[in-house]
Length: 77
Image 1 (cartoon, one colour):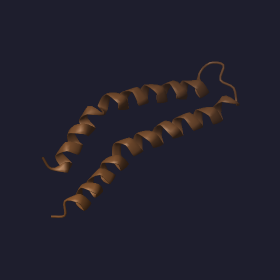
Image 2: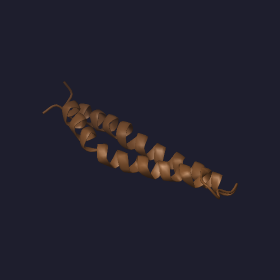
Image 3: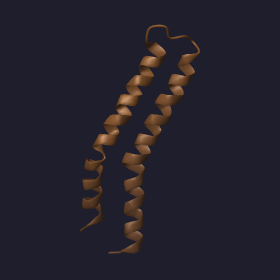
């Protein structure tokens, strides 16, 4: 089976972890903007949201690209 088809199937299976990340992201947004939020919580919110976003982007986009590169190195057509 070609690598791009396998990667697409895996990305569909990764949808559930992506929804978990979104739930954590919305929880972090409420941390800095909810009732009783202080000025000290905003940097923590930025760090949480930034790290969750970066890790999700790396998981969804960078990992499949690297997998395709290695597949093309191993199987030059």
